[in-house]
Amino acid sequence: MQAFTAAGFTEPQVFEVITAVAISAMTNYTANLAEPPLEDAVLPHAWKTGY
Image (cartoon, rainbow, N blue to C red; front, side, top):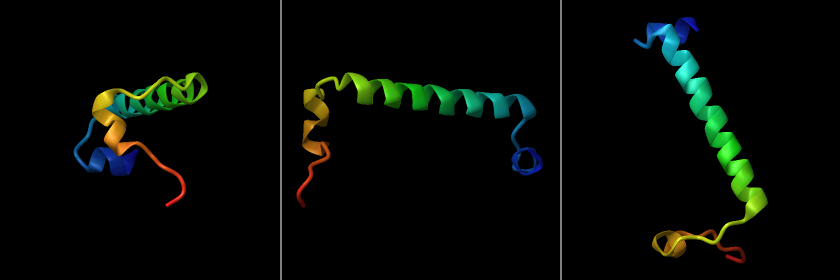
């Protein structure tokens, strides 16, 4: 917390970071379970095995 605020951030911003990380983790977990198809725009960047 001291390092975070010493870097110029405020204490309320700590909770924003925690919230963003939690939302990202839940989104990634849900996407891994649901396995939605990739959109055409990101298909060229899709992870491929066997390289």
